[in-house]
Structures are given as C-alpha cells and as structure tokens.
Image: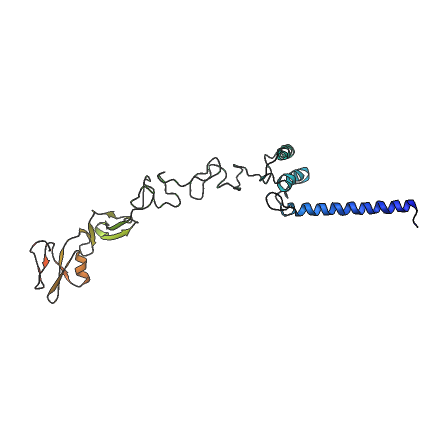
Length: 256
C-alpha cells in the first residue's frame, strides 16, 4: 500500500498531466478555429516580418481577431499600442489608401497614379467609371462625341454610326475606296459627298448614275457605275447614254 505522501505525489502528477493535455487541446483548437476572414491563425503569415511585441500585437489584430475585416473595440487599443511601439501608422493587414499598395476594395494606389485605362486614380483609390461625353474614349466605348479626334462618326451613346457605302477620296495618287461599316475613311482620305461611289475607272468618287455598258456582240446593259462595265469586259459610255434594244448605247436622255 502507498503511504499518504506517495498518494499525494501521484495525484499531483496526474493533475499536471491533465493540465498539460488540456492546454494542448486548447492550443490545437485555437489553431484550427476559423477566424472572421475564414482562415485559421496558423494559415496566415501577414505578421511574419515582425518580431517581439510588434509580432504579438499584429498576430492578435490581424490573425486572431481579424480586425481588418471585423472591427471591435479591442482593435483600437491594439492599433494604438502597435503605433507606439513601431511608429508604423497601420498593421500589415490594414487596407490604407495612399500606401502605394493596391489592397482589397481598391482599383489603384496611390491617388494620382495612372489606372489601367489611362484615367487618373481618385483620392479614394478608385478608377473613374467610363463616362460617355467626357472627351476621351474610355474602356467599352468605341468613340466619344466630344473628343477632339474620332475614328468614326460618333453617336451620343459613344458608339460609331454605321455608315456606307461611303466613298473616300484619297487624292490624285490614291484614287478612292468605298467604306461600309463604322471605321470611316482611313488616314489620308476624305469622305466625299453623300450618294457618291468610288469609280476605279475614273479614279475618283462619282455620283451614282445610269451608265451604258457597251459590250461585244454588239450588246449592252445599263449600270450605275463605270466599274460595272469594266468588270464585264465592256466599255462604259458617257453619262446620259442608254442601252437600246438593238444592243447599242445612244444618248437619248435619262435611263428609263
């Protein structure tokens, strides 16, 4: 049988083992518990660059209590102590506009920097929303009606007006081209008067007109552009000539 001292020592040792196991279980539970941001403290490394008291305060603020996403009264005390110890204005997990780092909820940082769409970062660290009519072509816009230069005839909703066919006069050496769509005339070319078409035969923009195409046979057909005659290996007549039943082109006035 054990004497009373041995019994007491065994009971004390058993108590110490029980306390140790309890602390281990509590630590394991804390390490696995989900904090407000959905991660466990053991999974977060935002404070790993700090040491000593600064690390302890950061661990409590950023990892254990997640003050950056779940504000509570204790967070202010932790921040005040952190500032006093380190001289830093905020914890590493805090999202501060103006710190030069684009954090959650920010489009840009610092204010005044250039956004991805070339607009200017606002004092709230956001990029301005595209605004039709602000004189610049923003993302999602084809053009802007108040911009000094536009690639196309621009409508009030910042889309290009569908044009065409539009004859573009490209000068004496460049001839002309017909454009259909929203692109407008290319650089070096000017839009001709409405109702004109490009004639490769003449090398310029001409009004749509009735032209007689004289072909071998003899035969003829009535076109609206001298190019139609050339494509069919026929000869275009002067304006005002019509194709007759006999297969010839005669100048008898406007085409029927």
